[in-house]
Length: 176
Image (tube, rainbow, N blue to C red; front, side, top):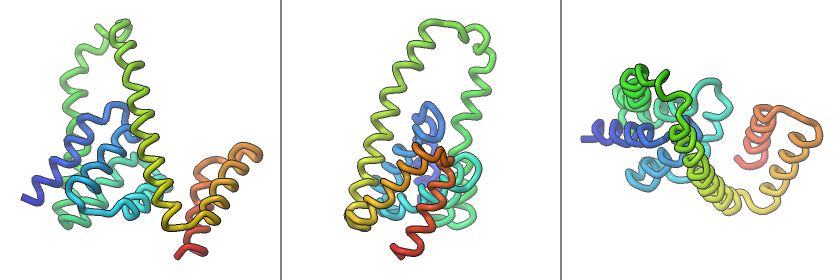
């Protein structure tokens, strides 16, 4: 039953996560933290931060780790399969219709209609992480990281990957 739960949690998240990794993260968080309670919000936030730093698709990295943590090697394989399967099925089934509907105004409107929903889901996720960071780290560390991130990205045009890496080092030194 545990392997079915792993499969279903990642399959449904990636099936409904229209728009790729950013759209699936709040859905995965809901399944992993709220529904199955395999992780706390803090653990999920830590995993999300580490997965952002590593190269490759974020949903597969998170699925592999969570699947392994919950169900071992077989759990990782099942979680990765469930993450990839919805996209693979969609590509196979919808590929022949691609050229027919690529310029369709209805498809373009549908795509634009989904964007605000994804923005709200990401906003809720960011708000939850902000509250967790505020409670765990305190106002001083949160303010330092926020100010440093804004300053380095906006004024000095530092790539966000380096800002995330710097925040990881800061957290490792001052918050561990």
